[in-house]
Image: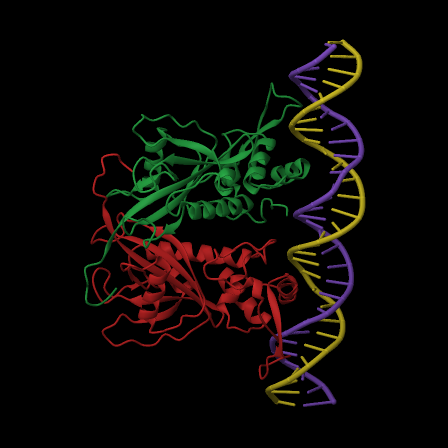
Length: 244
Length: 244
DNA sequence: GAGAGTTATCGTCATATTGACAATAAAGAT
DNA sequence: ATCTTTATTGTCAATATGACGATAACTCTC
């Protein structure tokens, strides 16, 4: 801090959220359509200004709830990183703290026609250039995808994409979608069920689907994210590793 | 963003830096002694306000340079995470973006008597409670240590603690200091030299030390951090893993 | 300058983990 | 019943890891 105590600059601070889910085997991201300039009509990450008295995570959760109309958001929310403040918004310097939500597929309530409509979009279409994002949100999305990939490798957070109870095949579908690879079902099963402190067998089976019924699992207690605790992200050894 | 366009709140934004190095086999952190309230006389992480027109990394580098008197900082600087804005500074809400510097041991130039003097302190003494940190800097340090540990596991950044050219034993000392474990010199040598794309043999040897001369290595080109590129942090498989 | 002390480096071996893939189990569909 | 589909258990070779023995190549001491 300079000794002469200049009045510190103040910046508008926003939170943005990269909400990821897996739908029909494909990784999707939650985007809103902007109704105002700049980037009117373009797609953008949900987010908004941090209010006085709020923590960053709180603000991210609030914005997401507001823009999706969903009260109790499922999944795992964590901070991703901060961007700016220079040159990311034509209106002036804005610092944004990006967040990452890994969640099971939840329905987005349609907002009134004057609200910015949030919806799931396949990540593939954004990366492929079919969809364009406002501001520096494409870069933030890139970083989020990178983070998500490594989270699966070293933490039990792949399960954050699943419902409370899930089958090994559903969990495998998450890994395949996030990593964009195929995984051998037999080796995946061995590793997932063989990793101490990861999964817990519920005791019941799926019914009604095609093929042999599958056993249901949930996250083991010691692997569940404890709010307040820094997400002990590192499983040793890595849970699984993307092939190629 | 709310539809009614309320004037967005603005926050003072600071950058803090957790600068780590290894001195005499022990992990050290760079701290300054505060000359003004609050926490006058207490130790704190170097840092200061982000100026208009600055990027976060720039600001962190500038503050560090100012407070150490060192122009061209060695090592690797990256963003760690953001904290606040609520309740971390008695004077009011301040958002801080913490950074992490992994650097070889460099001498801190002594500043004038009116400046906040920066110096290296053993991390052990901070964790042990001998030294107390201002604000929420103890928590930030904790997060930084966690990050540093996992960086060594999955990236070539252990070499950021070393000079341009180094021996395997020097590199091993880094791992041992950061992880707080002993590593088998023979197995470490095998893994470090056997990991493709990590090290490059310089061709020369050390001289003058006790014992057999050691071969000098440098980071392989493909492992060197490329500014602009998101630090591809993940080596597959993990470079090495802490024991216990 | 011979031996002692030190550090670097290479090698060996038992064990654990991984990747590839065969075989069997248990359902629904025809 | 038989076929199709998905789940789960095994097997086996290749690879990586942890624990150590054995040398190599210096400096230091006397």
